[in-house]
Image (cartoon, rainbow, N blue to C red; front, side, top):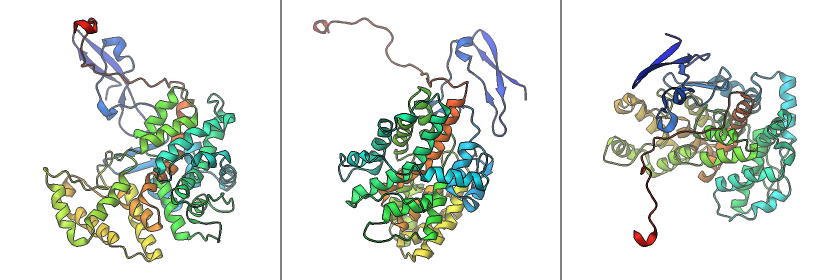
Length: 427
């Protein structure tokens, strides 16, 4: 391949450099396109546009590959912990035992929230969606932690990153507690990151909470699988907000707002709702027939993916985990049977195989979270909790990139051309 790409436009031919990454598709560097041609590219959804240079996460959707700093997601989910993956994303390498212990200690010492924030929660309605609460509370953190909002100071950026990773479980657990009218539980630094979150969510002050290790491991895996996913909508939102110089708490609040959309973070909730709608295994053929009918608006939620055109590598881990959790908790929910049979039918139906509509991570994670005891309204909040580490890692990378500029997408304008104003009495 030539190291330049030639573009013919009316009246001339221009050349642009071809940039090559460590893996994945090459990219055409069109930063001087407008200066050379007076034209922009048109790419709704930015599906063919590389908006940044990143060394964090790599996805090959055709092959079903997801790597964090080069490590396959399956290996990390099976062998690692969320704290270890968080360190990896933030620092670029897996920690040794001393580094991991120090990082875990640092995160555990940032888990408490400013006491005034408890009053802040009480300003919300009891039936407020947890994501609405999290948007507000995370955005408000910048009003409480002024000593870590100077984005030009690497030390302050790292403190803010640690605070966000540490406080997100507390924020999410308090959102849940507030919705059910139970008292907030302070963090317990003797527990793991995930164990602490489970206790703050399901424990009560009146009795001791014992963390179930199978549930703890399952939830930790879910956190790992959702930690980062390249330049998706919410990550791009965090980067776009950060490109303006906004403080890190505001940037992550923007990411939470974007994640809330049903096409993004709400997919696991939609998948579980669909399984409840199907109800019993005998109704599966009816719904599969509806999914194949072009005139029926019904869609099989939790199947297929915008990026993965093969089996979602995260779903492989979840497929095993869902069985472990149901066995441990002795769950006999018909929804589980619907999920298993629907999975089997879809994987063997020529229609779904041809269209590569394989079960994705959302199909399984919603079932697991429901079995653990989370209401569907908390699903996206848990996604936000896990994705925070990816967001802060991407934000840190962006701030450190000397080529980063404030985001400014262009447009294909189709409105009226210039015209003169007509006074209201003459219209």
